View (cartoon, rainbow, N blue to C red):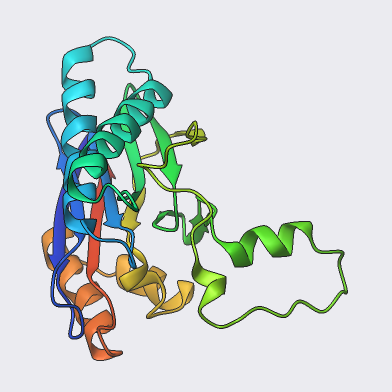
Length: 238
């Protein structure tokens, strides 16, 4: 199978700094996004450090089987060390959602509220679960019970790369199929449009380079309240 990919990021209309980082390394089969944690200093440094470390670990593994959990732990340690220098009082952090596409499969690693989606045969699926207060509360809540959350606290992360405690990474594996369209996106995109809208844009005719700007444009049209970053991967027949 052949892969076609593209990455695009935009600072948006509100933020003074772009704290997102795109991960698009076709030669390594490595794709994803990272979003520096809002409310903490050094968000841009955190996402850049995580992406840089992940690329180094995957590249060092060569053609061998990369330990994605180990790679995420290495990124966590690197961001934690950087945080001790950049912001010793609070530390720094970032989300990471990535896929390693090799040998007919995509291995996913995920921490935070950036997301990975797959469009296959007209079905659009979210493959990651947000690590936020709202999602965790709903999982623990008894069905039918009323759940009251402060509008701002609901989006607070319960996990991020750079945290001092041992990092728990969500890992998954999916077989690749010709015609698959994958997208990794930060919440500056996913909060600005419905899944149906995102699926419609991803499914349009065109190359990844042609489709990505339309996705970013809609996020900006809706207000551009956050940095908006996405990486798109198309799977073609060999």
